[in-house]
Amino acid sequence: MKIFAKRKQLSLTEVIAMSVNEAVSVHGVGPLLQVSRERLVHRVRSPSQIQTKGPECRTGTKRVAAHFDSSDVERVRAFSKEKAIPQEHLIADGLARLLAGGNSARQAA
Image (tube, rainbow, N blue to C red; front, top):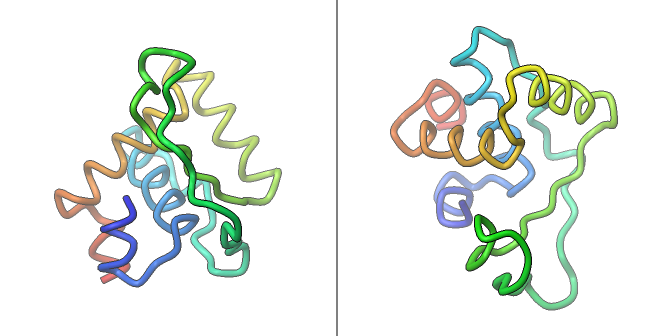
């Protein structure tokens, strides 16, 4: 995600929004998160560490934080619950589609 963001000169918040929007587009849903630089927040302290505790699916990963309007977040939560797709999977699936040249990747290029 960080390499993609750097290559496209985007923030991680923007990449997360693009990933979620790309993932939900497969289900015929329009963008749920606004892609914007207005909410950019830099992590000032140390970078996130690789997780060694918690669910097995998250072991070996790093946390990535992003900030969105609460109404946008609620729309993503509702979609996630309705479709029984974890929010983490929306991001991962959308990112895979972006890396493969999805619609949002072409728009951001």
